[in-house]
Length: 241
Image 1 (tube, rainbow, N blue to C red):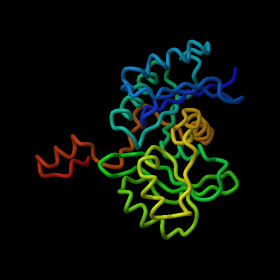
Image 2: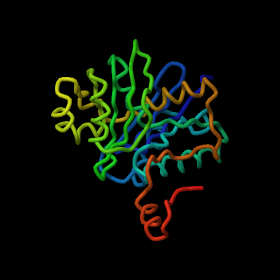
Image 3: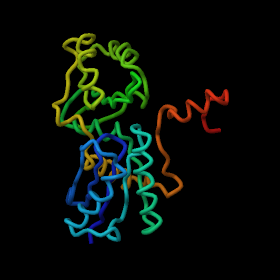
Image 4: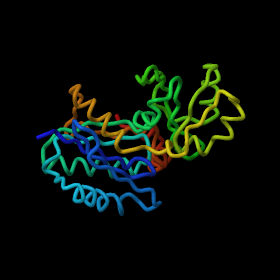
């Protein structure tokens, strides 16, 4: 029987899941309804598995996005996968949302800059270079203001393809500052596909980059509002450690 991997993403505005085996994508489903993921994700996942005649017991590995993205959304995805791991005791892999998002442009050569709207006049972002289909991250995952990002990108002095909901929000600003060097992905490429999470998860599993239930941790990149308020009240940074 072929190995099956279940990928889950609730870290972004779209909640989605996909099942992958050696032959390719067996099932994929996602929602962009504006409803909270806690309301809609599990029923959607159950429907996808039922309609595909796949049971949870058939899943050999789980992949889950750990951020950056919605703090609540990240927690929902991690809690869901950790719950599954307690039941079926299978391995898991963590996937960064930005890494999966830039895979939407696997055929686009050159620099790729995914941006997720982090609100508060910030974006979650990183910078990648695609050479002959091999995508390599060349700048760290960060939360930063669009103005800060622009100052860094101007130094590249070459065309950069932007994608993600952050690119939709700040498109005019980046066009004004970068001119012809700012290229924007087609609208349908701006949302993370759960199948791309699955493909990255599959690659990491094959490389042995697996995690147990206690190893799956969120990648937030900045403090949550609750942590900021705690720090303001207690005079600390609100950070772990």
